[in-house]
Amino acid sequence: MYFKLSIITILFFILAFIQYSFLPKFWLGGGVDLVFLLFFTVIFFEQDYFYQGIFFAVLAGFLSDVFSPHFFGLSVISCLLVYGFTKIAFYFLHETRGQFSFLYFTPLLLISLLIRGNVTLLALAGNFLVGLVGFFVYKYIAGKQNRQLKLL
Image 1 (cartoon, rainbow, N blue to C red):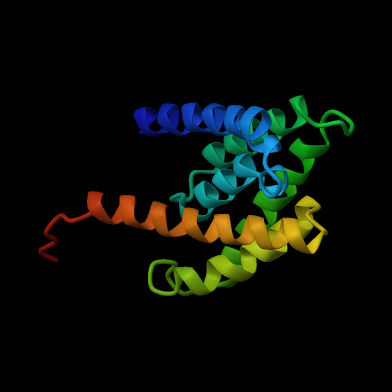
Image 2: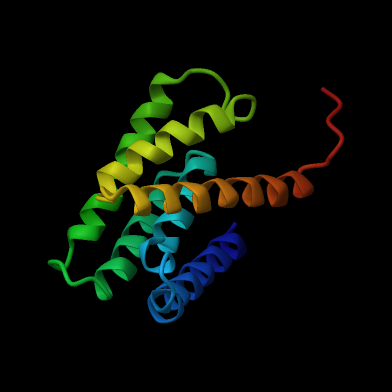
């Protein structure tokens, strides 16, 4: 479990480096928030560990705040709000996430992007498309790991 947390934390730092040093040079890349999309994908697929979600919300918010021109702490608060929103949504959605995960992921991602503050249509569309790619990549990687035979 700690190995997975350290790998995801390193991935947050790598994506923050790519997002704030490499992607602003491109036209559409400046509007894609890779750190937030990784954060949302991780909290969507997490296994109800409260402290991990809070850790990832603070980490994603901190990395976004360091490079943001807005007030420090605004991204942390928005990530914590998105985390709380997704946990409340999963509390009211009583079905299993595995069966209908794509149908849960798409509206939650759109609402979370609006909570986060992506109000331009181009930024919303770019983040949504990159988020869907991240969803399928995460689903593919997680699917390769869970091929254990279950007898009961």
